[in-house]
Length: 153
Image (cartoon, rainbow, N blue to C red; front, side):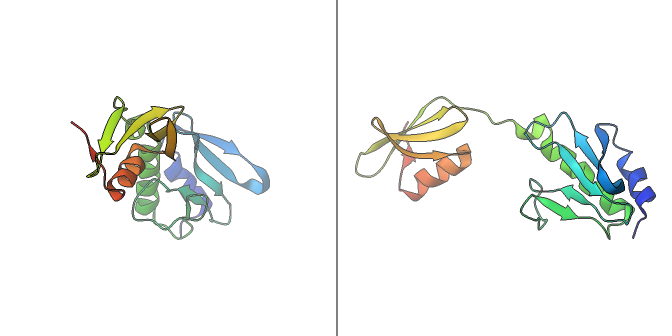
């Protein structure tokens, strides 16, 4: 296990992170350029060696309910790599979603739904009635596929 000082040395290799001292000697590191509301990359790094890194948007890691993983027993290389991946997952480049124009979707019964982006949500309309709201385009497409709809040409 790396010591607190060794972990700080690894974290300090990332100039894009800003140190924020908190209570009981713990330290957080923020990524101010985050494209989403989440800015804390390293959370509660403690002098006893415990600490967490935000990994919710990184595949292959089991996270707690806040999207954090415990890095207490990580090696220097593992800690560097997970922090690097966390920063990349929060970067503006990784969080750009191309917003297409409104799309019509049709099923085998000639029923038509409209998919449109409004106020940060992907909404599916059947005429003037809202049929569903989704946080991502991918979720909306999955719903439409499961309901037997295909994108109209």
